[in-house]
Length: 560
Figure (cartoon, rainbow, N blue to C red):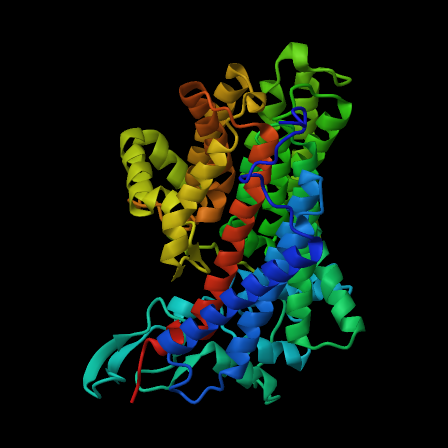
């Protein structure tokens, strides 16, 4: 039979689709999924039954599905892992910026007012200085801590049977003023703000004396002011400014990290991280600095540039949140001496981190005191029952009791690893995200198991010690500064404080899995899988956040 050297084509060989066909198929798939989701909203949440035109939910979901499909296709063309990750962070972050209603992130009212003041060129602090009336209307329309700050109980009507049944607004995007007041939704607040009615109250500058971490948001607000937008536009522009800063710092972290990059991408794209990164909180840049510092610890060799980048991030983090972040100054000592190639020894650079951090902390504190006007005596947060010195003395004299407090607080809060879907002021639970968040972190850890991602026993061990000390330190700091003396639980802890720990946990799990499983997965393949896993999860998180506030929960309570 002639042609013995001619290669035979297998019927199982993969088919290469033309680019136009591939684009058409993916866009059509995105559109179909969008239509299915809009139908789910309309049926399950009764949008059609309430007389809401199907046009807007269908159009929204269709557009979102097409946009997500187009983003997937475009990201395939970006070869650089850090650039792909940064684009994904930015796109998903934009969704979070608009899925989250105004002033619902922790302390966002205070952060909004301070950012707004900076955008107006006010670099001092005056308790008697007011804002435009438009800002006062925004404050009145969107009270902070929406979900549980205005909960109520009463008797409603079952929409199917017409029978009376009790209801409770806790955990839903509803509020009610007074026992017999009208239960209002987020839509009512937008209508209240857009009505243009006078708020009837004056808003003055908050008790907040930071400038540096609010600059990215202030630049966004300043641009919005130049474009003639109002207070609501300033808020979203400020969020986008913070998001840009978060994205740039995350890109730098992904670019400089040399190992475990899927774990870094995962933690950066976690819904909790993006929720804060796309807000007006200074935690946007603070979290990104944490990730950037830990990214430097994945570099086998430290040169002067690596040490300088770590130092800059460490000093900024300490200037943003004084004293709590001082433990980060010791991490350069984790690098083994043979791996240290920077000019100056490890203790010298650790000393520079400590000196710079303390200097910026003192400067920020003194600046806040000297530039403060008309504030008078500022009450201690938590009231008179909080006393740092007495609380420290209590801990030292009752160490076993304090260990019980630590363990009990962790138990009550699901170790904070089970609260990755708890948003807002610890009052907006998205159960699906809380259940799946640890699983996504575990999957990212398994994507870090290729042999080339090993950090080495020495560095991995010291990072584990740091994680334990940092977690205990964060809890102890909140116990001393915010918790009444001798209280049996710690007040003020929130899941976002522990995000750096979960990153280190993923790195540690990867080290254990690498030794136990000996996987054949390559780094290139692992990084290719990381983006759809983490980016898809972030996209789902943004959609569910929007669903809770704007689509579903408001209609789970049926009133007369």
